[in-house]
Amino acid sequence: MPSTQQIDGAPNIENMDLTDFCLPAIMQFGYSLLFSIDIDPRARSINISPGSLWFDLTTDKTQCKKDKEKFSNAASNLGILESHKTEIEAAFQMRKNLSRKNEDPKSSQSQEFKKNTTLKELNSICPEIRWRSVFAKVFKEVEYEDYEGLPITIEREEQLKQRCKQHASALQTDRKYIMHWFYVKFLY
Image (spheres, one colour):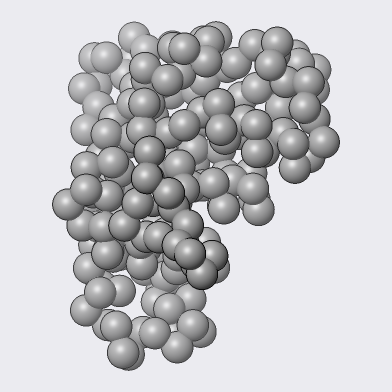
């Protein structure tokens, strides 16, 4: 895999993958736009659940308006709203499009809300994320390095699978907009 660091230490945006975009938010907040991760102390398991983009901005007009306002305010606070207005609007539109739920109602009704899985299965559900690397970095940061034997529980598997594909595709086709979106979202 190509390096995500340039010689001067700055991120090499062109080589960043979905893990690189999600990991800073996961490390800071425990969740990203795509997924969240935590340890259930009672069950002693790793929980993977939907991230902060769990609602459909194409149908939830109230949430869409609030989200767009927060997004614009964050861009304004960064001083980039006016100078990059087109890119910021395109980034929010991408966010809105990626929030669209495409699940078949029949499959979502029969789908288990939570299920136990393995790292290997998690890699096949969302191969766009380097799960082993995420776990190693997150659990090292919180000084919980004895995670390898813990069971993994996933919430809304089909939603994660769909969103991973959507985000990876957007990263390939509209890298500049997804980059704006992730960075502005990280800051609000």
